Amino acid sequence: MKKATFLFLSLTVLCACNRKQLHLTRASFTDVELVDNHSPVYFEVDPDSKEMVVNQDNRISNTNYIMSVQRDLNIEQVAQKVMEIKQRKYDQEGNMHADSLQIYYSYADTLNKNLAFFGAKEIDFGFQGPSSLENLIYVKNKDTILVQGYPFSWNDFKDHLPQSDSLQLGINAKQDFETYLQVRLKLRQDSLETRFSNQDLVY
Image 1 (cartoon, rainbow, N blue to C red):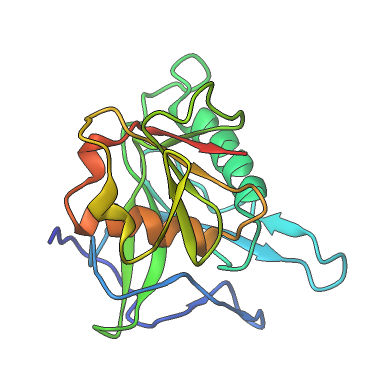
Image 2: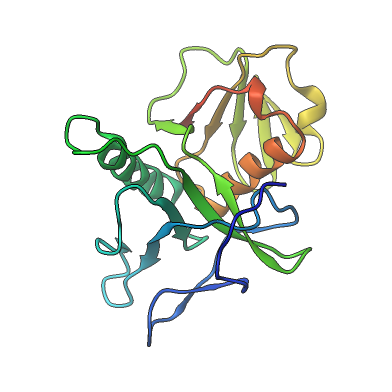
């Protein structure tokens, strides 16, 4: 388990003074426990418009971005915004200095009772479906994952993965962010992540 230095020790994140807490994705595994040199990025719901809002300030170049995402936000909306932020962060032409530091998603490890972080710098999103079901692992909903079109439970799907190192993760665009991140965490926890493409498809 990787470690660095980070100040938060709670299961939820206070966005700022007098603002409500974010309800983060829940899991029972800690990927990264502590992170230093960071900038906070909050994905939350505006109480008036009910639309997703993302803070525009507090992002400092050459820092690790900690993305704290309200767990029930739509994955497609979150993924599109994440790609915009990554483009700005890693744009070699638009930045005076190359930024090579990480992007993390924060989440609550409810088993170990701590705030944890999932490194996601290398994971991008695409927004079109694949041309074939071959090697496709598709998250239909919180109960069902389709392996090359065949339905399995969350507990069983990994036992039915094709014998390939070119697997493709896809997720139903109507699902929430928590559903997506829980699958990604499971792949990392079970040492299956390297068999998957670094571009996840949301459709």
